[in-house]
Amino acid sequence: MKPLKLFFGALLASASMLASAQWQWTDHNGRKVFSDRAPPPEVPVKNILKQPKSAQMGLAAALEPAGTPDTVPSASATGAVAPAAATSAAPLSTLDREIEARKRAALQAEAAKRKAEEERIALARAESCTRARQAKANLDSGVRVSRVNAAGEREVMDDAAREVESKRIQGVIATDCR
Image (cartoon, rainbow, N blue to C red; front, side):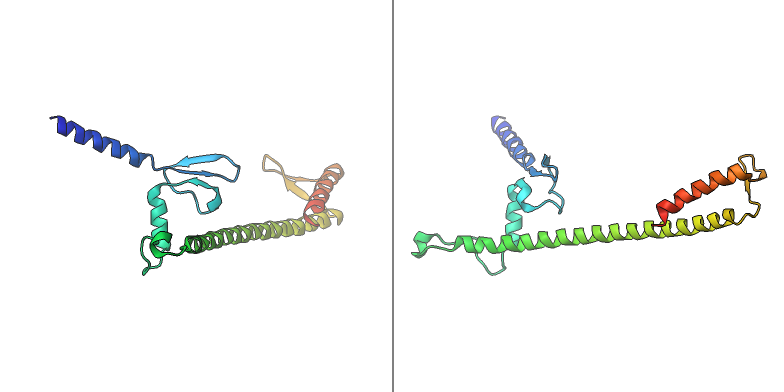
């Protein structure tokens, strides 16, 4: 019975090690974020403070060329200094390029979205300006103008109501017809 308890104890201990696989990074506000999921692609690599060992190994395996060995021979075994820094810098620069490309794509998408929104607003302002100028010309023409009140009845505007409506329309023209 004792070996069974030891087995389950060891199993429980190894499960807790898997649960400690956490990501840690700083967001754009400088706050630390803790999660069991990878950070979004907008987070630069320099802001990732901690990542699970399995993610580091998976990233290194994904970036490693197919024909290269898993280990770099030590300097004592080859008799020369191995250029470990040069070989490890290449995959990181590839990863950095990929991250930068994602950032650029996200920024371009954001800029396109912002431009489309600005165009929509400009089109709405132009239409509002056209309508306001037409209404102003109609009021200034001296023709009797009527409108429908809250009760649904038609009423002719007197001089005071025309003046108020003219000032309101002039305000719309001032803001939308720049």
